[in-house]
Every structure is written in structure tokens, then in C-alpha cells.
Length: 329
Picture 1 (cartoon, rainbow, N blue to C red):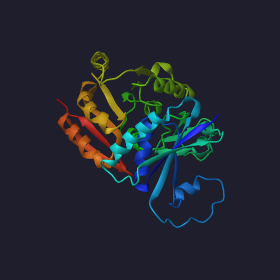
Picture 2 (picture 1 turned 180 degrees about the horizontal axis):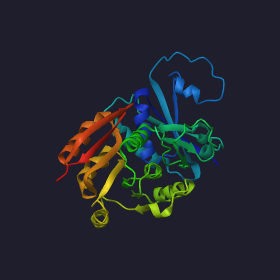
Picture 3 (picture 1 turned 45 degrees about the vertical axis):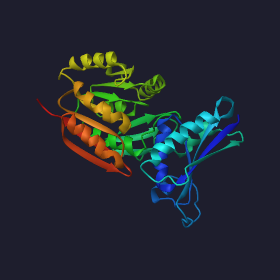
Picture 4 (picture 1 turned 60 degrees about the horizontal axis):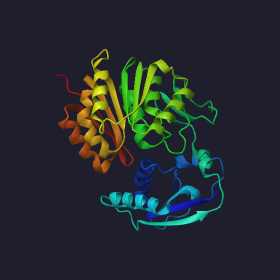
């Protein structure tokens, strides 16, 4: 199989944001080239001898991804990437911001990335381990294992935004809680909620493929099918669906979900936030992430306007998460 390689010429500081935006656009696997030395954490994850780190001479970086040459319209892909570059470039320096393409030799790009996904502890009580690796015995006692096979288009739980949500759930979720996971992706946050003691999780995503992947991950983790519901639907774009979900939430024992979690993007979170009180009980917890620190003020303002209090902003790298509670009537 032949692959077309798309390479974005950018700056080191923009790599994380561009990678996240490409992932959100459905890009399947990302390769990063820069002159920065490996961190101590990176080195500890590798099982090879490493040459001394070169001295970083500039802040130039390349972000590459691959498409099947037989099933790809390069012009369409470039237009998508250029739109992402324009959006990101409106609030940060992306450097050259140029896209180039080339054709690669046959390689197993689909599966080679798995070599770099290693087990890790995401929070005090959650340990993430890929399905193709046996647990290494280093997991602390009392910690639950999330087994994950995300495929190439969905999250592994290692990104800061997902970690922030997992850690917030670990800290705030109470046993027997009902959880609503909006934009569930690979189902990680719903599964984590159940591993932490939630009695039921409702997971929603507008992408039917994401729902299918989530179902597979629920099965991998031996989650009781009676403890969750997976739904393909759009709360923002389908008022009937939104109303049906509100009715379902109102039938819960506490008159709404105890916890709502949404790890999406600010462009979705801001219009979604005013709707969340429809699904959340009084005093219920709202956890949201996927937010660049530069846009945190937009989300905080939406939370305040939508009747949330006890608002807390938690940073990690370039990203933040918010936890808040629905104001009691």
C-alpha cells in the first residue's frame, strides 16, 4: 500500500495545539519532528539506548500524517489543514505554516504507532493499559485498570485534556452517581466513571463510529451492559434529541445526572454549557476540558452566565479543565 505524507512546517510551541486540532479533524496518527531534547519521562518510556541529546538550534518543527494514496483527495486534505492553520494562527505563532506532500514506501503506519503507547497511571485510582500489552505488575494496589484499544482515530487517555477529566472524576465522583458523558469518543471517561463506582453512565457522541469504538472498549473492560447506554446524537444540532435526553435526565432518582463530563473543544463547550443545567441535578458536578489556556476565559464566562458556581480552573501544560456545580435553587 502506498501512502501520501502531509507535512506541516511550523514551530515547536504550536505542535501540541496543531496535533490536537488534527486529531479532532479525524487525522489518523501524527508524527512530530523537532530539535528539542527528549524529556526524562520520554526516555523512561523507551527501551533502547539513546544517543546524547543534540543541542536545540531553533524552534522549527514538522507535524506529519499519512493518508492511503488510493483513497485520498490531496487537495481536499490540504484545504482542511490550511483552515486549521488559519484558525490556530489567529491566536498563536505557527511559524511558516506551510503544507507539503510526498509519497512514502509501503509501511504498516496503521499499527506501528502502538509501539509508543505504554501503560501509565492517569490518576490516583486509574491505570491505563493498552489491550496488546500485559500489565507489567507495577500498578499500585487498589488502582483500577482501564484497558483501551482506541484505534488510530480516537484517544488513548494520555493527552492532557483527558487526564484532567480522569483526575477530576477520580476526585469528585461519588459511588452510585449517574454520569452523562457528552462527546464520549472512545468511551474512556464513561468507563472510568464506572470503574470509580458510578452506578450508570450515558455516553453520547455525534459520530456513530465513535459509538462503535466505545462499545468495543466497554466490552474489552468487561463492563456490565446494564450499567451504561451508548447513543449517537447531537445535543446542539437536534432539539428533539436534546428534549428527549432532558426527559430521560428528569426521570433519574435525583432529578438529573449527578455528573456531566464533556471533553470537547471551546467552540462546542461554550454553546453547550447553557444547555447542561437541563440534564444536571441541583448541585451536580460539571467537568469540562479540551480547552486551550488561551481560551479559558470564554468557558469561564459561559459557566458563570449558565448558573454554575464553585468554578475551578485546573491547568496542565497548554490546556485547562473546569469543574463547577449547578447552583441549587
